[in-house]
Image (cartoon, rainbow, N blue to C red):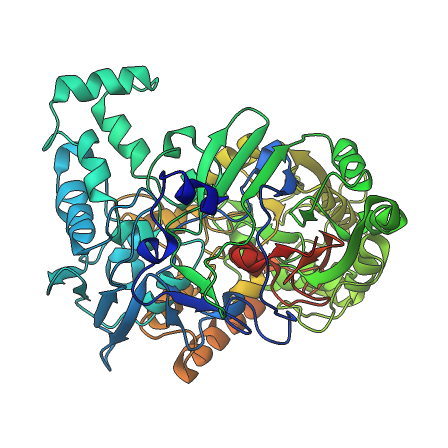
Length: 609
């Protein structure tokens, strides 16, 4: 595809598009050698990878933010530079040095230099009228209460970030696909000057904003300095914005998102061929689960694994594999199983709150009782064919309803109402609804099983699914006592994901998180046992997760979750399907550990035919 553009004089030859020292992709670079039988590939010559998503959780496989460092399979061990050819940090994890690959270009052909870093700091974050904040990851310890990194530019390729305290976790932020720190440091300055009032008249900018359906220049500039989520979720305002990613975003409609090869990609294979091999990745939005499965069975999908492609659909996928010309395999998920969250901040403003008396029990008996009442193996066998892992449940209490009943009795919940359900010690009704986010149908099923187990020990609990927007709003407003949501548990040890934060996902202490995030100006001052959680996070962020010190801090975090039962896991790590075209190569094998690693491995994929 690109060779034809070169021949037509529309694109420079490839040796003029690559950096002086390209990033070489071969065995063990994007995925561990145990997961991919890696071979050099061939170009797709217009053929595209076709994927599907549901509209509730759309994303573009292959698109994403700028990774400054990379380590295979979403780990943080022994990272290497991607757009930087060298980096190092001080022994105390306060000073980080970077050297950009010389000759690296944005997707429009502009050189990537430290001018792009200075533009981000000086023209975006330090330009108050733009109202663009520093990414939280550029504050020490990733905490907005602490100062931002000090930028020192040595020359057009080298720069230093200095933090005011040890921040070893910053290594993870430079690798993580979730973090926005890559865009936080690098912005295409020459392109963005046309949207900035320091370089372009405000009247002109406001006209451009109106043409784009935005209110003013400020919204326009914000829309063009997109972060990871704007790109991954397909914001049309990001079309045409230069990128250094292997794929660039080119089309967004109500039903289709398209990315195509970046002609200035910095990656090559072991034979010097510029990556990606495949010209396009097309993602189609299909809301109905049945319609999504029909497209798979009809062979209209080249690769699929997603939050909605779950193990219960495996019989359907397997039965249609031969006719649909695809293979089906199983892999460990990036996410964990649907998990029960107990909100320890609920009703905290009520001085006579019966719920808070249960939460403040020094022995944590309510959470322990709930964990003991849940039959983990029954959840696994009933909903997941017994295939989910059962040896890594963070709240690993054995199923023991008798012990659960004893703990509830000890808490003074031994009186029953006319229906036989327990009441609070003061005789008032103890009634709870488990609210499960409806994006994940398995979550609703798990919530219903939870309610049955808890009813069996006398708790008046029912379950319901809640649409995503309503769920997130009510959880953030501290309106739920119990919820069901998933977590990115397999990515916790590496630090790639920290979605266990008390206000994220199922919201187990949203007001305590608000207090920490606002430096005490809002929310609830955390009780001592929740403050211990925040103290562990501070200690953890001082060191890189991949070091022995980082592993020790993660062990402290897991122990805290196991002891306090703010989240209760029904099973351990999940297993989910991968559907891949029969002639797609360099794709991960069966039992691949953390599935989200495939998104950034797409540049090495190729079609055998």
